[in-house]
Amino acid sequence: MIISLTQYKGGVGKTTSAICLATLLSNQAKTLLIDSDPNRSATLWARKGLLPFDVCSDSEAPKRLMSGQYQHTVIDTPARPAADDIRAIAQGADLLILPTTPDPLSLSALVQIATELPQGTNYCCLVTLSPPAPQTDGADAIAALKRHGLPVFNRSIRRYKAYIKAAEAGVVVNKVPSGGVAWRDWEEVWKEMGHGKVG
Ligand SMILES: Nc1ncnc2c1ncn2[C@@H]1O[C@H](COP(=O)(O)OP(=O)(O)OP(=O)(O)O)[C@@H](O)[C@H]1O
Ligand SMILES: [Mg+2]
Image (cartoon, rainbow, N blue to C red; front, top):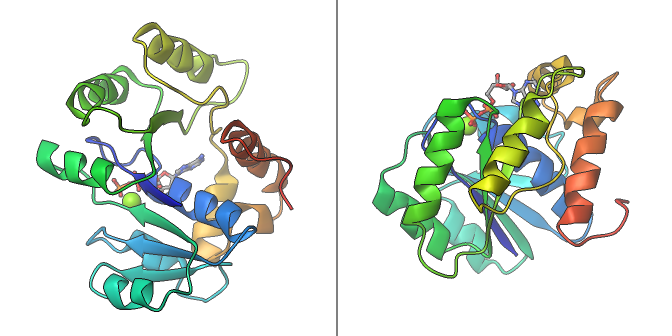
């Protein structure tokens, strides 16, 4: 399984989502996260060696993949890719995840990407950084994407400080105090991906 994450707009939760998805996949089988972003955010997150999967750079990826030890690969891509990059990323993935914050600029970037994807791309939008209830921005964004006919996860990823703490501590969000509630969103997304209960 190769999952890639991309978006025209930066800061929409690509790296955070890549870390969480790689964690879910690593419960199933050995997983490699390829950090294609020159900012190296995922590599920085992994620096303490506390994540349940391996992380490597683009240049290390061929050797790692040739070793045959990985069943799953997650690819975190740079911010602001060109349209050609997005098409290449889409072609190389079994599942392309397009994270978006629930603001109009990020949503319209997605609508744009969707028109540029190669035919037959298996992709799904994921609304991230959605503000806490009673604000309805997350649900509104999901409804807007559906109105545009875009595939989208029904569960949005809520905004919690636990993610910032997890990145600082170099762990997955479910390993920090108060991160359990944030992790529930990922368990729901995992179910929507056709998997059962996590664990
Ligand atoms: N669900 C969340 N709740 C709270 N903070 C979050 C959440 N998701 C991401 N963040 C924070 O928002 C910022 C952007 O997230 P992230 O780095 O994952 O986005 P990105 O799309 O990879 O950014 P870039 O385009 O710079 O690579 C980070 O500081 C991250 O810790
Ligand atoms: Mg990133």
